[in-house]
Image (cartoon, rainbow, N blue to C red; front, side, top):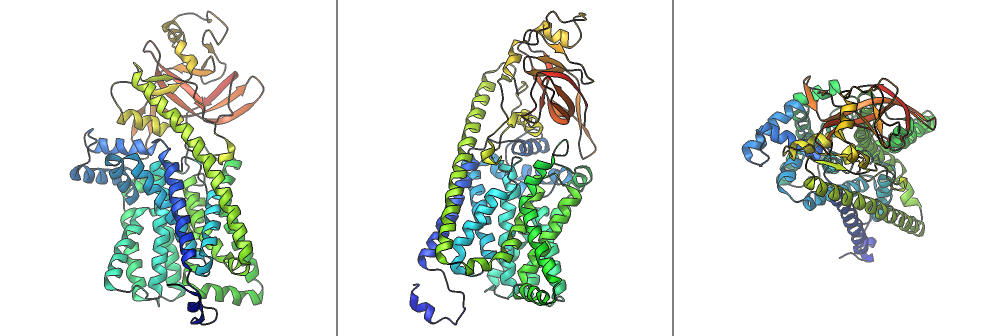
Length: 572
């Protein structure tokens, strides 16, 4: 049992163990983080990849969505050919097909809490300040990481939070392996199995980690412990298996951004806050190295803990990947933010030792209050989105054609920092996947309520079948009005329409696939003078109240609203 007498037996400057109260605080914070993110995830309706992967499973198994060993192996083989070979996707599809939603939410919550705990363990200078480091790391992750862009979608969480937790746990394993501190043969065997899975789980994390491990080995002239080489080679084997998937290289050659068009500067900077801050800290260190007396200090700092140079190498490798392949992809910047945060906190870790306990307690209390208030608001907003989605699906079940007429608001409060997952029915991947998985002969879509007033005569006019050169009414609230511009759109109420046409998407496999929705880019000129050039938009096929097929066009940003003077554009 811990007591003050134990301190008397320790040499001066030794890392004192946590008291029972300190351990209790750490466990309480980890549990609280797990509950927070699990509750958050529980209220996130399935979106996008959550249906797309099920659709891929059904395609690989002749339309069957029943999980069997043979069906799973077919899916793995097929998915490696057309997409990637990540272990996290294979874990997800098994749980998605057989587990209740709350169990997947529990995995998400556990992944987030382990990520925070492991990051704090990697950067905490001494164990006695670990509770304060946990609070600092959690606050930094909560307010600066790129959560936006459906980051808390369930499959996205399995591709972000789960690999983050596993990668940081692997780095803790490496720290022990470098010191030959893995106690038994059984523990080392388990560590090697874990290392292989950690390398396999997501190549976006494991490839930069391999670069960091290689840098460490190079600087140490390959004179490292045999335990290090055991876990490192197993990790490399898992990474090589992940990157050997043919579909991964097809995607890499064809996809460079996470959307139909590049995001604006404000959005891009919001994705890069954590990474830019870590780079700024690195720049300060670099400038300091130019001074002669700093060179030895920095060199000694890196030499004192082998993992520091490893994390630095991982961070810079991930930044190079982000700038060279997917500059606008939030998930790529998440990887940079993760390793950049670990490196940055390793640099500033002495602050936690030098500040008085009273200051640390006050700062931790303030951080806790901010985090609690922030996530209470985020979960409240996410719960309202979940309730709306439940209402939409009930309406779909009652709809003759699958169309729900509802004014669908994609805006969310900025006080949430855009963490909630919304706009399900303005997401091409979601609409496509949902219609495949839930296929029953209907076409599922959500369009503005004003379109419930469409008649066959209006549909004929939009399709050019009526023979009339002018509309019977010039009021867009009563009759569709043709808009000037090359897009060929009609304004009806607060909606934009056009005649049905074949929508074809070019997949990264080189195949063409006919879709019921897809992204297009338009130039909008609004009646109040606002102009939005090359605005990403989604074109959705829907069935009118009389069963006519038409296309509804929705701008991807909530700020683009009518009435419109003209709309021009072209398909991406």
